[in-house]
Image 1 (cartoon, rainbow, N blue to C red):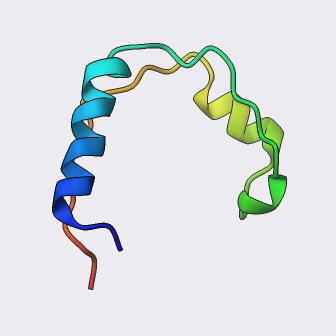
Image 2 (image 1 turned 90 degrees about the horizontal axis):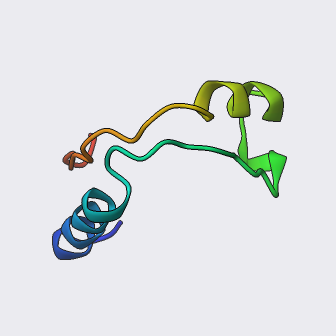
Length: 61
């Protein structure tokens, strides 16, 4: 599990370069990591959407 400084650094980096940008294309190199969703559906759901402001969440119990 990453520690808070690493998580915050990644969140800040995403905010600086991804927030508000549109996902133009999704490439799936290993469909085995997609559980319960097809590559086609995954692409359909993500392409054309924009990144919102990234948030940090605490560990789930």
